[in-house]
Image (cartoon, rainbow, N blue to C red; front, top):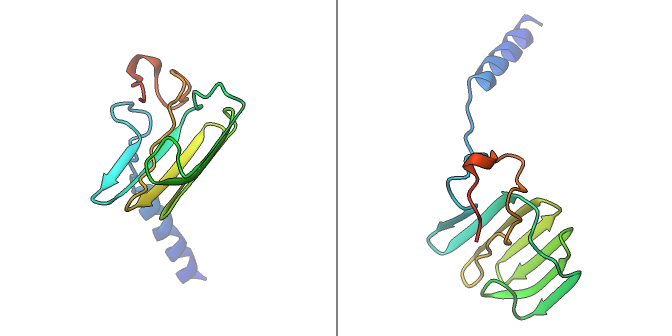
Length: 124
């Protein structure tokens, strides 16, 4: 019992001293990342899409996309040969390698709740 309590205490102390910095809220850089032939994005912002439904086969906003479907600002789905881009409401995430490297959809200015308005960066 004492060993379990010490282990739980040590785990709590170590977890409490760990800092994870994902850069959320700074607004100093775009949400896209690239590593050689791989790339990805993660963003919290409403897409700036005013069209109710769009669909592209063997095309789309990013090169190498095989299928792209957008349902207004509510859902985003994009598939590439070796990657995927998903969005549900303001939550956007995607990644791919090779010919398909997705990027975050254009977002409405000021729609990211983690970016203060005086430090906001516009995504293009």
